Length: 377
Image (cartoon, rainbow, N blue to C red):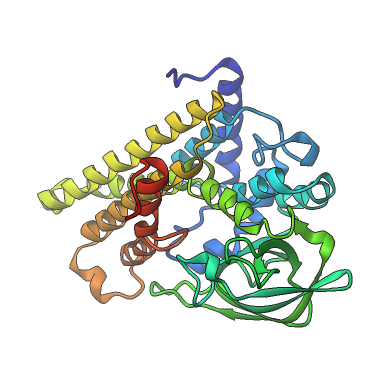
């Protein structure tokens, strides 16, 4: 693999660096402050308006039709500048692009890519987390509409979303994996109640619960065919778990860079185990960066990873938790008694990575059965 920039890539990198020097919003880490989440929409539109968002997506929908390597350059430069990573919407674009008809794509993709329409993903439920196919939210056909009743939880940005990418049961009398459909549901309507969730680290604006009580959406807002929701969901989740499209590498690298600066400013003030924790976090973040580069090279060669995204998800989990542990190690004992300590918040948030997006146990099962082909019994 040759990681050197082509002339076109180098020119893009230079232009991006110049823009970032004047437009870096200087937000706190995503895992420590509500300000980060409240300003995500502004950051999205700023990147898009400057020509730095949707780089590898179709020009027809507001993208730039560039090779995926430009997304990697963007991630690298955002991390180097200490700027927030790009908003992670690739999984929605992928789901609609693969499964939606032309009318659906023309209607929804431009707003997603530009950031003018904000979306949330309504998958998990109180009794359907890892076993997503057992969800109970229903969408019942009523003339030209579907009527929706149910309860979603851990729904990112639900309180500010214009639309929900909703997985619901449309066919109750078939096998649970086959009775699901994917619907785009407008959030600003009667019958939708928002209940924000407070995280253990104090964040209140990232996740929420959403209750649907006879909310409605037109049948034309279905993504894919009726009963194919599980297939759409798996496309989304396989893509969501790949770090190349989430900007996670940039987020981890940003935190590691800050930890390194802290230790280098006064090395003698830190014990050998603290030095070792930061060193190992650097190694882990660099490992993930190189893994992403390999994944990118494979994608450019037409390789689709499918369930291999579970390997990526496990790597992301290990790296985030190593970075969180390093942050706590550098902060020292004072972090444990200061509820507002940034390092403590980073550490606490990192523990959630082994649950969100599918638990580590589920990912290991997928790797065992669908990647390695091991027997299930």
